[in-house]
Image (cartoon, rainbow, N blue to C red; front, side, top):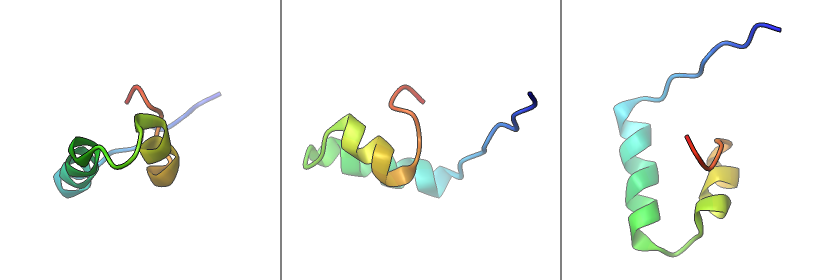
Length: 40
């Protein structure tokens, strides 16, 4: 079972972090929205 690791651009990471800091959604909701795991 080979899985390739997805890479995330700095722009994507900053977008997710800024949304998380706004605290309008939970970590689980953001993870679902962006299709990432909550502990990434």
